[in-house]
Length: 460
Image (cartoon, rainbow, N blue to C red; front, side):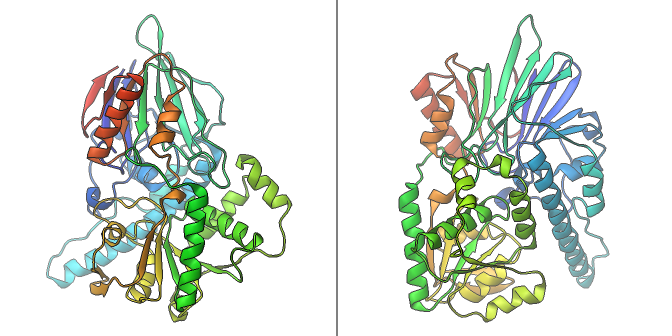
C-alpha cells in the first residue's frame, strides 16, 4: 500500500489522502483549502487522475473535507463515494451552497476583469450541475458494518462524534501474507458534546492517521464554558448591544441552539431571541432533526421533557430578512456563517456591529491562519470588510470549549486503546502543532510518529 498526503498536512484544511494497492486507487476525503491555503476561483488540478480513483471515503460533510468532491467528478471520477446516510444528507446541501458561492464569486471576478480591460472569464471550481452529478455516486454505509470491496480490501465506519454522520475509517488490506489495517480518525469529537454520541474507538491497527487541530492545547471545562457564554450574553445585553456569533452552519449552530435552549429551561437566560442568518443552517437543522437515531441519551431526554420556556428562534429566508437584522440595535443573538468569517452573511453583521463597544463577538470554533476570524482573534485593531476599514471595538470572546474537535488529552485518550504500537501519521493541524503533538504521542505511548508534509508518500 502506498499513501500520499495531498492535503491537511501541517495545515488544518483541504483533507485528502491518496491510497493505492492491488490496482485499486482510493481517496480518504477530498476537501477544500481555506484561509492561507485557499486557491483561486478556477481551482487547481489534482495530483492524480480522478478517472482512475475507484473509491472515495468521505469522513464527514464539512467543506474542508468534502468541498472538492464535485470538482473530482467534473474531472472524470466515476467511482463510489462511501459515506454515512447523515453525511450524504448534509453534504448535498453544503456542496450546493458551496457551488452557488463559487458561481457568484466567479461571476463577480469576471465582471471586475472585464471592467479593467481583461477579456477573460473566471470559472468556478465547480457548478451546481457538477454537484447534481456528484450525488449519483453516493453510496451510504451504516456504522459498525464491515464491507468488503474485493482485492483483499474491507472497511468499517465508526462514529467519530464530531458532527452528525461523522466517521472514523478502519481499512483492512492485503499486500502480504497477513492483513494489515490503517485507521483514519477523521475529525474526532469531544466526549460529552451536545446532541451527538461520543466518539467510538478502535482497538488495533498497523497504522493510524490522526487529526491534531487542538493537539497543543486543552479545552476549557464545559461548565466554565457555559458560564462564560452566559456572562458574555448578559453583559452585552446590559450594555445595550448585540451578540454576534460566527458559526459553521453544520454542527456548531445546532449545538448552540441546544445549549441556549437548555439555559432558558434552567432559568439562566431569559427572553432570548436567536437569529439564524443562514439558509444553509436552517436546512442543516432540519436534517439534524430527521436523524434522532444518532442523538446521545441526554438529547433524547431533553426532547421528551421539552417545556414551553424555550428560546425564540428566527430563521431568515431572504436577503431582505438578513438586511433587516442590521436595524436591530440591542438584545439580539445573531448566528451566521461562515465560521471563520471568510464569506457568507457574517461579514455584513461584523460590518454593522464590530465597531460598536456595546456589542460582543463570540468565536466558538477554530480560526485558521489567514482568515478574517483569525485576524480578529489575534487582536487586530482594524480589519477590512467589503473594502472598508472597520474598527474592532466590540468585546471579542474566544470560547474554545464549544469546539467540535477533541483537545490534546482527548486525542491521546482516543489513541489509548491501541496496545500493538501502531505507526502514527499526525495530520490536520498547523505546522508546529502537528510536530509537537507527534512528539507528545511518542513520549506518551512510544508509538513511532510522523508529521508529513503535503506531497509526502509512504509505503505501508
